[in-house]
Image 1 (cartoon, rainbow, N blue to C red):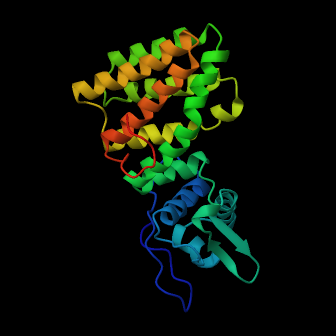
Image 2: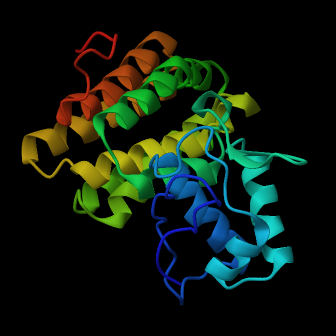
Image 3: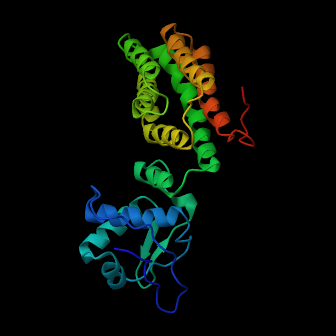
Length: 259
């Protein structure tokens, strides 16, 4: 399955799709949705573009009409497409996309990580995670502290550019969100995961000084939560998030003060 989506008749040439190679562990409709979704996010299918009709798309992807319709339905639910009778299927404006959807976030990473994406992810993290750390310091239960400390130890024991380090970092942030006692804060887990993975794609903190600063800042959050110190927990969380932005030079013009 290669090449660009066929152009609508009498329309401009359609941009090329990122096509999913055979052998991926995706269902047919998920693979088609991902391919079109990445094309939309990467602006190969610009806002307002009308996709080719069902017959052309099923022939292009080599799937049934049922599979195609399930793919389109998935993208409509995520806010990327809209369908109307006698008009067809169109790409929606970026403001309509469900940016909290795990697939949409993952497709952003597949489409390409840049400083703008890091800043956008950091904005929502800075709006939510320091408060989550504060609430964890006020509401946490005893069992969460050993869990958080275990994540710190796993980070210390793992190379900074390893999956183990990334997973330990992510586990710590998700456990803090859960410890806040607010289910809405835990629900931004996909945003946190996307932000961490984007950061590590660009550059893991492999420099010894950066590594030590990162681990120490995370440890500060944990010990502040253990000490029931909400102010220190929030400040340490801000330091952790800004440290990642600073490492990639993405903090400039972000609107947040850099420590």
